[in-house]
Image 1 (tube, helix red, strand yellow):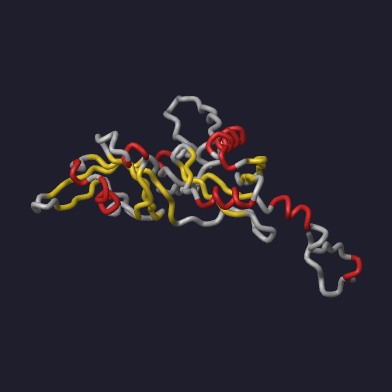
Image 2: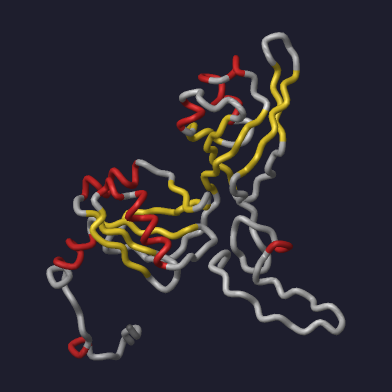
Length: 234
C-alpha cells in the first residue's frame, strides 16, 4: 500500500478495523512460522517433514511463502505451545528457525547468531558417561540434550549430543579434560552440520569453496556446463 501523504483526503483511503480482520486473525492464531536456516528445499519435502515429524501436534495445514518461510497451523493453541516448547528442530541436520505467529509479525528471515547442532564425541571413557557428559559437551558449546542411544547407554562407540553454537565461533575438532588421576583425555569432535557462512551465497553450513553457486573456471578448451538445479544452499 502506498504511504498516505499529508495532503491526501483521508476519507478516500481504505481502512480496516480490528473487527474486520478478527476472523482471519483467529484462524492463524494457532499457527507457527519458520524456515530452514540457509536452505530452501522444495515445498513437498518440507510438507512431508511436518506431517511425519510433527504429526503428534495435530497439524491442520502447511502453507508456504516465496521467501522460503512456511506456516504450520495447529488445531489448538495448546498444541502450538507444545510444538514451540519441544524444540529445537532440525531438517536433515540443518536447524529450523521456528516462531509463533501473531497478527503484527513481519514474516521475514531474521538474523540468527546461535544454532543447535548435533555433534559426536569420540574417546570418552565409559566412567565419564551419564552426569559428566553435559560438562564435557560444554567444552564444545552450550549443552542442550543427549540422543536416546547416548542417554540409555546402548551405543558406547561415541556420545551424540546437541549443543548450541554461535555462527562465528571457532569449531573445535578436539577437546581435552583431566581424569581423576590427572591424566589428559582427548575427545575427538565430529559435527553433523557446521554453522559456517558462505561469502558467495550468504548461506550457512558451508564455505565459499564448497558453494554450489560458485562459478567454476572452465579449463582451456572445455565447454561450459549448465549448472544443475539444487535446492541447497540458497
